Image (cartoon, rainbow, N blue to C red; front, side):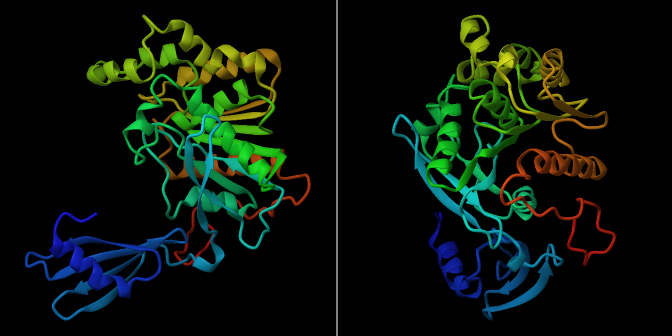
Length: 355
């Protein structure tokens, strides 16, 4: 959608020059005749160009990830399915390159937020998982943004309920279509996606072969208590959108995975930042303690110098290598096992492909 005809005309004029994927103007000079343009797709992280509107000439500035070849990367395909109550749920399915979409190990990857969304484009996590031989399924469950007010509001106080049903129904759709091997479905998510991961293995324990929870919420009561004072206006919103401990306590117990750890059957890997101000470390500690008491396999990675998600490069390498090994162990053995690539490592040479 364009707000003025001049910009719309500019994009229309440039469109024939950027046929692969999407393109956006990232900047311009004061005269608005020379532009910086980004061009990218699901298999192209980004290429930068100059564009001179006066001469209609483009100049090549270079690729953001020159060591990656689009032909080696997996296509992200938009899909949709119908939830049990009739709501249409949109999402994205990424299949390993050169592999038939049949009876595959699958990683279900619900997004964080939850009032955010997945979108079509290059995603390094998804590409890494597809490279290992897994299909990756991302769904914009109710509450995801970009689908209208009704879709968003239908998520209020539905954590672990209809929001989780949308994820479960997506798994069932993959199985019905013959894409997923029902015995090799994993779930992995961060923040709210981590909550959805824990909810998935507690409320539908027979659905998943293993799970990876990355800085995920486990207890709605402690989650509310750890919201910092300067977020007070946001806390009032959270009471309306998630639940108020003063009036919704019974529902919050039912929706908090930590109170249902007795139902967990599959192996779990948890990654947590010790200084996370958004999802306190106690959220993960509670889960680990409860599962260890039951003798359920749980791997726990805590990084003392991290907050809400890992940002230090060495910690990211540790996490992705550990997740890689964890998934290979639990869903990469039976049937057409994924081909393991070399460990994720820091590239010392910009031309190295394995990052």
